[in-house]
Length: 123
Image (cartoon, rainbow, N blue to C red; front, side, top):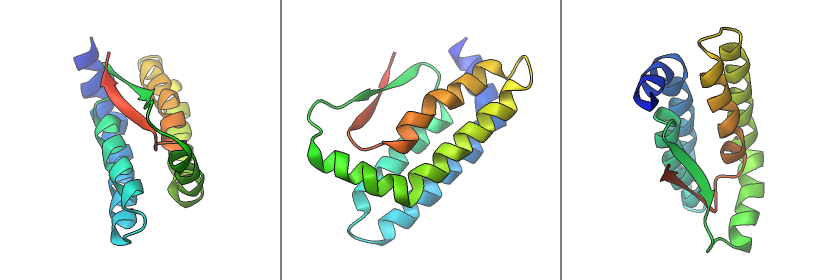
């Protein structure tokens, strides 16, 4: 079932959302200081392409630098990516077949806002 949902997700939302993360990652990697944001963005882009069967957990070794980085991330790109997930989730929930995909979008809002100090793991 995860594979079917992932294929439908890829066609309806995954490509566009992952593209947003890749653009944010490239922009962040242009500056030396924001490379950690770019790497986190690329990590989440992979998750945005194929989210079902995986989840995001908090990294136990993340500390204050991750928290401070997340504040900067929200101001730079996180808010816009979260709005993209919310808008796509609402649009997908308008159809019966899109409800699981919309819920998947809503599940990705926290990681789009606070990506540092988190990791993607299989369920």
